[in-house]
Image 1 (cartoon, rainbow, N blue to C red):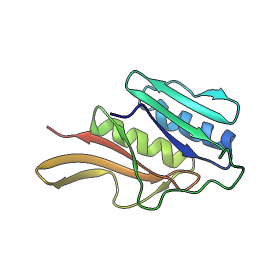
Image 2: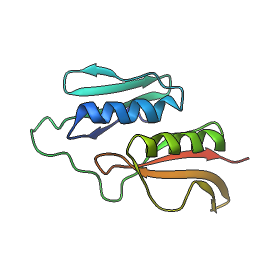
Image 3: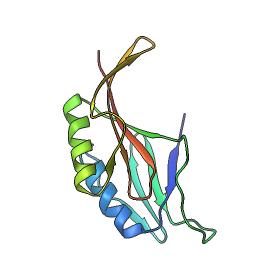
Length: 125
């Protein structure tokens, strides 16, 4: 359904270091730099981070969450640990199982360096 997701940052170098570390746990190669943007390109889509083109300060979306698919609970834990080590802020409950609407999910949540809410998710069979 989606071709890409793009979020804003106020410090592209710090964002690249953060997301290179975080997404490396999902076997995603380091970002390609394209001027004021960085891109993580995979077979299933593109995740981009940019300095706002209008020159104003980047802000996070209140109520927005960006989720990254993981292959196992261990990968979720690795993602979370890498994010915290890179300066992310743990939010909500610690990584673990959440159930609702007939789904059983293993989730972890962080705020990135610019306050964007991000999540790692593994669907438990």
